Structures are given as structure tokens and as C-alpha cells.
Image (cartoon, rainbow, N blue to C red; front, side):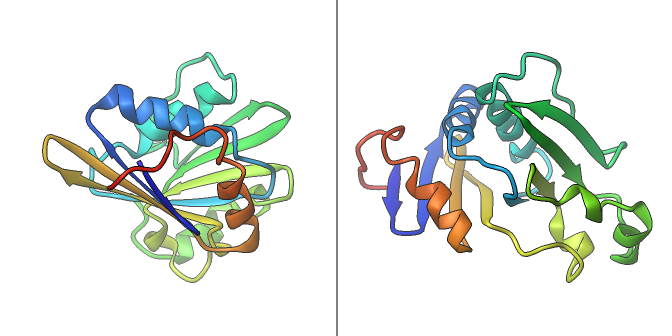
Length: 165
């Protein structure tokens, strides 16, 4: 795992590593945070979200919101919304779906395929990208806002000592 000022990079060898990093990231979340998740189909976006929810204490089933568009959870006094906008054909569908009010100071919103609602979503605090690498995947987290940078900085005690990425 490698950290720089506003970026975190980690190689994730398998599903267990993805879940584990999700649990660590959960400790930095707070209300009002918007996270964009980028990666191809099967990249591990929902697995990472499952790990985050586990880290927040959620013990139930976590399913992909591909067909429901959003899966809501209440954990650790937070409203947690996991969006999957893959099926949107036009950004205007975002407005029609009425999701805007879910982005508020008491919620954490994880958004898969945010480009499908381009220009209509609030700006992301974190952008997480999952890309194939060797037999696993590379996660890169970029903090984009002051809130995002503060949340990322709060992970300092939870992360292993930095090493070469």
C-alpha cells in the first residue's frame, strides 16, 4: 500500500483483500461524503462496498444495485446509499429518479458508473478506481475535496506503513 498527500494506492490480490481494505476505509467515512467508483464490470466495486459496510458494522446481505439502482442501508448512525447507474441511458434519468435528496449531510453515497449522470451529481469527495493488475486489481483513491482529504488523512493510524506501490 502506498500513500501520498491526497492519494492512496493498493494492490488487492483477491476478494478478501478488497473486503479488508473496504473495512479499513469505513473508519474514515462520515456523513455528507460522496464517493465515485470507477472500474469495468467485475472490477470489484460492489465487493469494496460490501467491505465498507462490514467495517461500519452491517452484517446483512449486500447486493449489487444494478437492477434497483440504489440499495439503502442504515449503519453507524449514517444513511448509506449504494448507487449503480450502469443502466442509465441518459443523464436526465438521474433527475427523474429523484435521488438528489439522498445526498445530504447525514448520508454516505457510493456511486458506481457516475459518468451515466454526468454533470448532475454532486462533486465527489473521493474517486476510487479499480483496475486489473497481474492476477488482482489496483485500487487508487483520490481525495478531491477538503472533506475528502480530511477523511483520507484520518486513516493514517489504520493503514500499514507505506511501501513502494
